[in-house]
Image 1: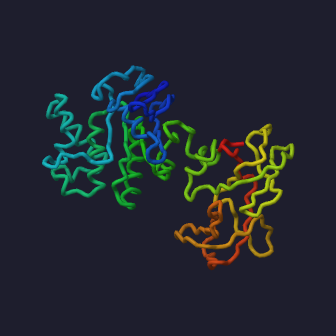
Image 2: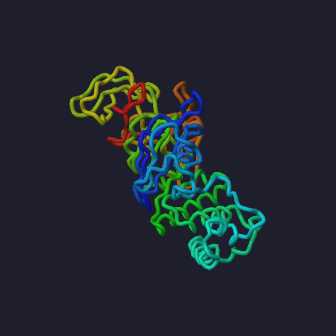
Image 3: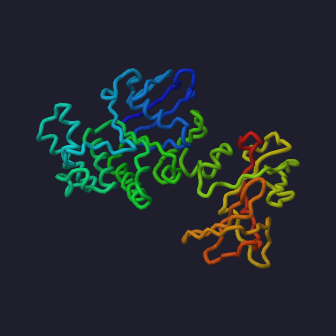
Length: 363
């Protein structure tokens, strides 16, 4: 286990800056997930920690040692890639032991380390098989086992589950979480899947265009986003974000707003900053689960016209008729299935809405 620090680290390819200067500290034993859309620079950032890309500026420290100019083999890290990168002519045992053999580890010690890793990953019965005889999930476990035997200071994962089908992704996600708990190792994990980020991370780093938008525990990013990008990226379905008009503050930590796309008038929206300078135009946000279905006779804040009902078994979502500002999604109780074109009333949970500036910053 080791503390990993990035100090003012940046990366450019020629004249193109892909990682803006940034600082990040991953504490010993943490599971930090770097998440963001395709092309945001998350894999490049991970490869710089691994030593597979050279930082254009700044310092990378692992366990207090500056490794910025060191070779990957000198950094004490091990990386699991998106592709399994197994040797097809070698058995599972040989694949897992190969790096140790190249490092000059004795045969007896190699066997001991491989067996220990195999037990951890439930691969004991597959040690004499070739990769072609394994499932996708088993191959990924072999790739992870190859890193475990090296006992690295830091584990690095570059979208390791993206090639697996949906059922295997869930299974492997649980196995990686269990592995982190058992090893207590420092892990840095890159993904574009915010569900993976929410379920695996002790802290999430949200990256956009080479810049860190927000860092924090999953629950904090979900409940207290700093801007519209984080609010819209974290959560599935995403937060509803609609243009709003701010009239005034009520002097008690709320703004009085209209949200035309939702039919909201003189709605009281909570402010993060009681002293925020309130613009005339803003962005109103509310998550689908905070739009609460109103039964007959119950008060409501908005009325939505049903366009599509998405029944996922455990959750049911209503998508309203698309407007110029996009669809609004609301969660329905199980068993409630309005027909297309039917109107449905909702109230907004107390204190569960958000207000942002036009530029996207949280108010």
